[in-house]
Image (cartoon, each protein chain N blue to C red):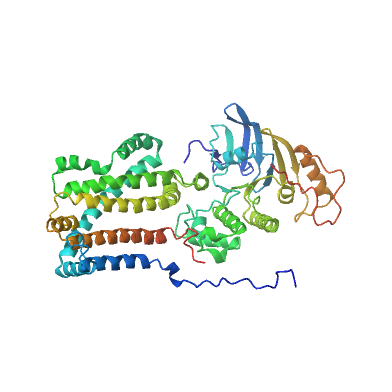
Amino acid sequence: MSLTTADRKPIELRLPRFALSNARWLSPVLLLLLWELGSRSGVIPPRILAAPSTVLGALWELTASGELPANLVVSLARAAAGLGIGLVVGTVLALVAGLSKVGETAVDPLMQIKRTIPSLALTPLFIVWFGIGEAPKITLIAVATVFPIYLNLFSGIRAVDVRLIEAARSFGLSQVQQIIHVILPGALPSFLVGLRYAMGVALLVLVVAEQINASAGLGHLINNARDFMRTDIIVVCLLVYAALGLAADLIVRSLEQHALAWRPSFIKS
Amino acid sequence: MPPSLARPIPETADRDAPAVRVRNFTRRFGQTVVLNDLNIDIGRGEFVALLGRSGSGKTTLLRTLAGLDSAGGQDVTTPATRAVVFQDARLLPWKRVWRNVALGLSGADARARAEAALEEVGLGHRLEVWPSTLSGGESQRASLARALVREPGLLLLDEPFAALDALTRIRMHDLVLSLWRKHAPAVLLVTHDVDEAISLADRVLVLDAGAIAAEEKITLPRPRESNAEFRAIRNRLLGHLGVEAPRAAPVEGALIAFPSGEIVA
């Protein structure tokens, strides 16, 4: 008998290879099945929660009638307008604060104060100021998205490697050229993080803002459905909100892939 | 541009005037005197190496000559066009290699000039790649191309070979010498490596406590081998740097000569 183990085959564990051990889709599907079963057997009444099949039907119905697309466009326009304003304001403020000490002294304290007030808490004030039309909704989204954009771009500008700025300076680049060629591209990754975050915030605030007496939009659809206890339509709207969040993330990801193509993680060998 | 850079040489300057002229230059950081009443001339097209321990003021001098630090109105004259090659290549990671070289160039021929410079350093095949895909030696060559494309009157080399492996370093030495012969800028090479200084430079200066402690004119023909005169110069320079010279000369023909002449700081 040899005591060496060099040529001994490793013991194979004869446990059955459970092919489903990596099936991450399984539990959601099981939940859906249980939900469907519960609805059909009457355990879950439709006024509590509509069956998945009913939700799908409602989705088809709302899409075919054009009701969902029309309201979706209204909601998207709101989110886009608010985010657009927040983006511009946040970017301008971050540039002012990031590129000069005076700017930082002037802008940053105000932004830090603003940060301490939860944006949604401003809702009553905006209703008093702007009524219940589109203005308070868009303003709310704009105000909420300014900060993530500002904070990330500001810190991105300040985190640009001084040695790179110095190198640019040694080659005689003017201050404007340094900003264009070194500082802004260097801050772009942080800016995109801010943008991704701001898109999430825009969606979140959109949901709340649309509860303010909306006469169109996904919020309007949900409010109506609530009044008629149409849980299927409510779930459809929740699904659409989720899809919007997913879409926002995809947009920023593809932006990153194009704008940050120079990053080692994106370079294809 | 930062205020009061070193004064560029006026167009009408004497043709024989040195490229770099520093007179009684003193630089303090707080109480610490970094450069003390320093005088340096570098001739046009002259290759000068500057040796010194850490904290001797080498970097401060280089930054002043590069225009990165203000000369504070003191008597410092440099060519109008200067370029620096740093120890870390400092390429902008978000610009392709040729755009890094063309940085700050204006005119329609910027790309052609950048390409020609990259060809010269042997990177003609890597124009379009991202800097993060370059090796250490390639990065330094790109950085050299970026400096030379400006046709500088003064080329400042801030320990540009320190982070390279020995073989790459030898190739870079040859490259720098051939580029220097072709473009003929005045060169100031800041280095820790005594052998490197002796093999490359026309003149080696030793900076100690903010003043020039020693000067060696190197008249050996290039390429320079480690012969008896080379070693004599090295021993003198090491002495000025406070390193004890070896008692016996290294064995002739040995592959590796000890001490290597490198001062670890």
